[in-house]
Length: 225
Image (cartoon, rainbow, N blue to C red; front, side, top):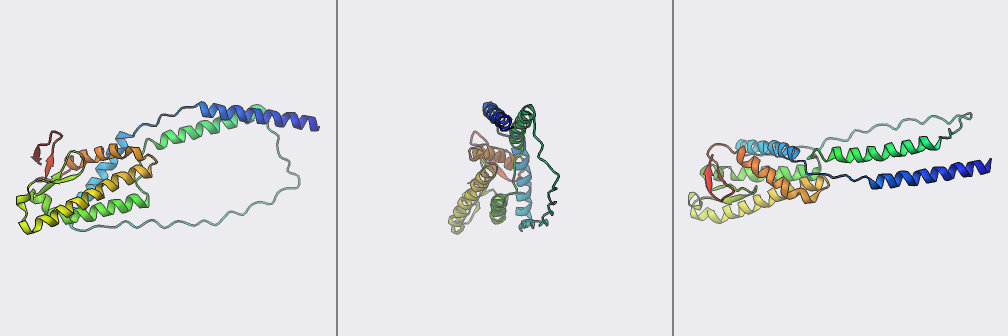
């Protein structure tokens, strides 16, 4: 009996090693989810433009965590015996688990999560900054660049005494924008995606800009919506 259990345990260990080797050999290429990034950028840009035009910011509160009482565990039966699995069954379970893990990772890469507290705080900061710049956008003093940031377009549209303050507002807004792009990338486990996320937002800022806003083309030319 002991010899049988020893041989059974040895087979289980060998099959476990085989399944782990199989899982390690599976290569997953996670590509940047461009469509999901553009969809997210479009949504956020709409919200920021709306907040800027309304002159207020609705701060999103974090949802309260629901507490669930732990389920009572059933008392173990005195007649229950652990079922011994055949080695082929064990291999099947382990292989399926490995491929489910790989599939879940690939599926997560097809979407972007923007619900983390850091992303929400960064978005709220962008909205707050945008409310201070609405009149400058409308006058043509500033505009969006082709790389998802803001630059001064016509300093003459601002009284001389206010130009220094405007430069500070623009610098603060650009810092808030770059932080938003970085936080979205970090929240999805890929900090290296920040540049591509910024490109997605750059397209959205220009495509969704209200009429009369100025923006910079990739060639550096300023144009009016």
